[in-house]
Length: 280
Image 1 (tube, rainbow, N blue to C red):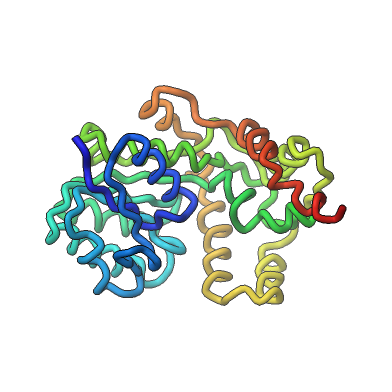
Image 2: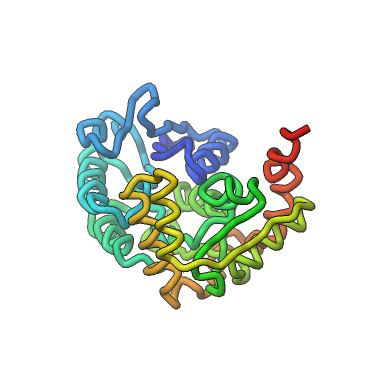
């Protein structure tokens, strides 16, 4: 039976993957974004009802992060509207080791809707689609907390778990923690990428203050600098965030994608060699 599913953030790292999986399963997928035919805008609660109308369930990703001011209020307004519109279930993408995100989880859990929480570690795709890509292309990446062990998780795994949770009611009411199968430091991750891409990429450890100051000098907005500081200090500094989970194996019946596999697959696309190619 087909479901009408709203994918909020359907053009983002996990959203577009979730939408693709659901479309391949012949589900009726509606993308929730500012540019959709029926627009959805987190900053405009008046858009919520129209986007949710006629939907059976929804995948919720909050931009830029559930930790930022205003997130709890937005999630509360969205879940209240979803209940009014008759949705059966929502899936919330949350952050592993984030206290503020857990407050948003509680709002969803107490909303009266069926729900599943998917708590994710830092994404592999931060190195290929997000904030770490440009430094890698430049051949020099400087990051704080270099010795912290992180169980990086692949966005493809997250999307597959989310898609299953949207369609499988046996996962209702669960908190699913998604991580990779092992931990790596930033230095080890960069070395893995360099080897896969056959590149020389220099890694430098710097202090968190120096990193944030560099962001400020580069013209990064203050609210995003605050978020980066929070994610490094509060999230990566949380020992719970360094624990490897086996939930992906439990839900999907296969092992989580290893960072090395991600690096090999991504390197084959040429994304990490584009700056070299453009110089010829």
